[in-house]
Length: 265
Length: 318
Image (cartoon, rainbow over all chains, first blue to last red; front, side):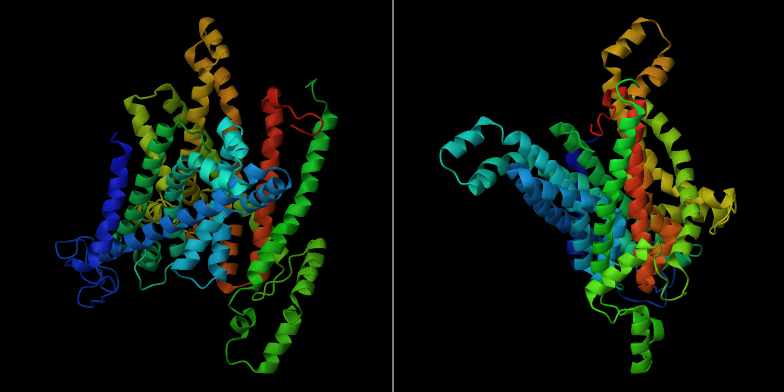
């Protein structure tokens, strides 16, 4: 097996390709070409064209930016919220801990996708609703993990030393404890990303994410679903990209977990 | 069983059931708040934009959305107290009856998924644990990571394309007997097999290094017997947790899968409700699913009590 970074490079490459796409000789992702409807993959269109004659390859490339971007932003947001909540709960303990962790337990008792769907229905569908929906379901794992980590870190002697030197609670928490927790938080981001890619695609498939005609992998599959028998490539390639991205993220997370020797469910 | 008599486990179960009540109230309140800030007006989608203001006003009164938020919520709780989810805004059918009719379908599918996933997941997990770093382990490992990376709606469509549209082996969609359940169950079981295999592998590896496993080997027992009877039994706790969690959160994948395969269950019902902004339907489904999720988790905790004497529940606590 290749090293973990290889998988990360694949994703970075896809993202870079997507960002650079406007400067490449590609048919525009939203350009409708009625002359070439549902053409099978060939030289002119490597991934074929869909029922409106749009180039599937171009749409898939442009879609990478949207899907990976949403997953990354949502993971970062979930990480920040979850880390703050978990650290506060772990550091202060007592009632604050009980209140925060009850909220976490409560949020976890909702079926995650159903919650994400509900949020995407409430907010006008688009990039931001998908991001908010994903962060709202993802922050709880960070809170749990970071709370546990802070509980062990705060009993170490350097924390006592910092307190004895007269540091305020906020300083102890953010300057002394936080750096010790960052690593585990980053690993958790890696673990979450694969799931976020899938969840974003599902929201797109249900019409609750990025709105058509903007290219998004999930929405492409749902739009081409009716033509699966006549033009299977329009369903196949976007799904392949989702799987590939999630696969790379998950393999990378696997390596990260092994390297950091962290057991997490 | 001597450590813990039948009475304490009963107290424990009773406590867990009592804890369900505040949880469900929180769930109803949260989902109620979410739905009330919805931008779409259900009345408009019911009668269309061209209805007269009087008609709209009458319908508002009829379904009670003209009252203020708190009295609407209390009214809903009262309704719930009578074991009633209200009526659908569209079909005017009793939501509780509809869910009661669809829940068995959903449960059948969930059981079918588990019937496929548990044996395959456990065997894959054992292969991964006993052939660590071998070629077979790497292949199985790749498959399990692939399994959690597949979007269910996509692999469902691909399986449907190959098995039913091209080869015409199975019906593409509908609710019914064995032939109809194969496709959705197969689709939904892929991620479950993978998760289960990974957890089982980690857990088996941990317990096969323990002393009792060495003793069993020293006694000269057959390796397969040690693996299945001794090690597996000890490795079961995390596996049961995952089975419980997957069973309970089954609806996550089912919303999409049931919709694709036209399986007439709660997931598809919820999806229809969401699309039509049918509040009573959405609320009914969310509450039902959360209740199922919590009850399954509770049952999982109780199962621990029976499979592992080390964590018997004592005095209603761990």
